[in-house]
Image (cartoon, rainbow, N blue to C red; front, side, top):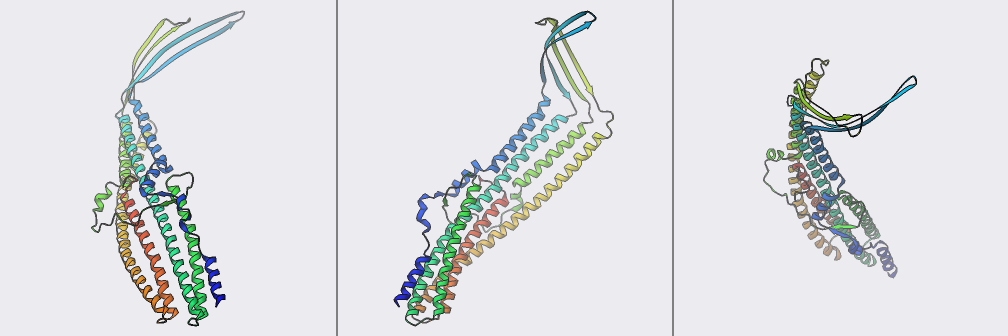
Length: 426
């Protein structure tokens, strides 16, 4: 009998996992708000999207510059040598001056180009919002994964303790001749399996840490934990107005801005058929000696109008029309897709919430049944096979509830993303 107790002790000692919280003090504790703030500041996708907005703003300034006077200054000094037989001569010339030109009329082509550029800015800003919503979803998913990994590890250790206690009980029964060897070996295998689950949970935890660090925009991985529970904030049973929510979705607003920009580009293409009127003025001083003293000035108007270019401008109008029609249809398709995605996300969220309630009740029932079964088995009222089935159901119920909690949070994140909410949503 002493041999079997020693064997039990050795098995438990070998399989005993190191504590999860042994180095908890060295891990950074992050709340969801902490993650949001850090991602908003450091995520490379958001930084790139901000730079894209700046590019659009600069492009508008470049386009609008044609509406303002164009002023240039000029300074030159030249020398020339002429050889004629045995006679050579040199001539110097110096000049400096300023010239200016101003566009007076071009059929509103430049104005429409500026308006199109303004719509491009709006599209870039909505693209930034879309990027922010995408980053928020990925960040939330990573946060949920790490939260689930933490809880999975705790549950795995709880299950290990249950299996350890089971092995002790079965060993006592085996020693007293009340249980067969197969039951003992099964309990040992269950304990070994629970040790494997703990090791797997630890590896998942490390992967989840890396994922969250990446979505926060960190350049280096620092051991971390997340704080918070599995509360659902979007658990509103009444269905919202999806059509109204879609109107503020960044994908739809971006598509609308692009279509509006294409409309102004079409007007600009039509304006190409109009004459362009430009005024110019220049004042210059010239002389053979420095500093120049001879004054020159000029004023002028230039009127230009296309006569024949091989159908170039007609083709440009046709191209602009086709682009406008394409983007308008894209806008309609985007709205349909946004509404459908929200419908699907809303239904999935409600399904997840209903499943969560079912799993809570299932775990409560499994815990009660396990307590009763353990007492019955200890006095021999039920067989080992029946008892292990009940214990396995308890283990499955614990895992199923955690899966349901994480799934509900994930469906909530998908619903928030479907609405187009950004990092500033909270």
